[in-house]
Image (cartoon, rainbow, N blue to C red):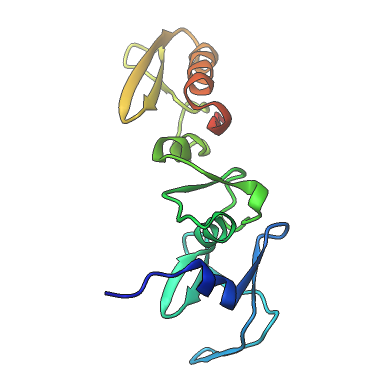
Length: 167
């Protein structure tokens, strides 16, 4: 079994700047990719738009390392408040449940109503639906998409508070 990364080891190799969200190297390292010098920013952006940082043969997401660095605890899930997976400033990161993390998302690209949580029914009315703790809650049908969205927005803010994103 591989040893688990300790806070002491993380702080031996990297300095995390909570104002910029960057991890800076404290040790010079050599690898097949070249030499990394002390003071250089660590990590690179992955295909999934998160900063990834290697340490002792393992790759970590920088936002998870930031929470570990600042709190000494491994987070279960971390939410980027501004939706930018490369913005690892401390003020932009917050622990979240899966449900809260999903609540803080943008409207899907394949949405055809123009409103998050709103779809057209077979009877040409507009339905508002929200998912809370893996349960689908139907909020009713409405004459216009604006009315349906108002119901969705109200329910979303009620259930998700600071994590609510309805645009």
